[in-house]
Image (cartoon, rainbow, N blue to C red; front, side):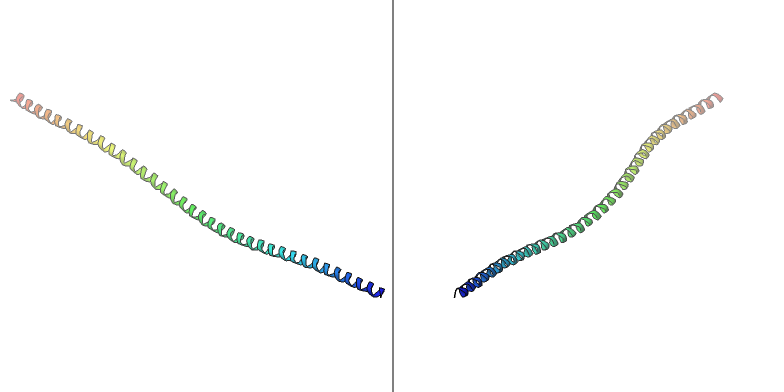
Length: 131
């Protein structure tokens, strides 16, 4: 009987040890499962961040293209502006020269009128002296 009782205690001790190991294994499995879930969540979050990063890179590329186009247009507009300014400068100088020439013509006209009057007077005096 003592031997049976001893065997029973051994059996219960082994079962308890097995149950303890099962509980430890179950806890380890749950811990690994929790780590897997966490890792999957991290992987999902990383994938979403990578997708967002790619989207932002694409958008940045579009902005760079738009900026380059705007810069090119601005350069062309500046060239056109300088051309217009040069044209306006030429027109202003031409207007000044026309004003100078108009003044010169008025002076020449006055001189021509004076010369004509003097020529008429000389002709009249010559006629009077000849007679």
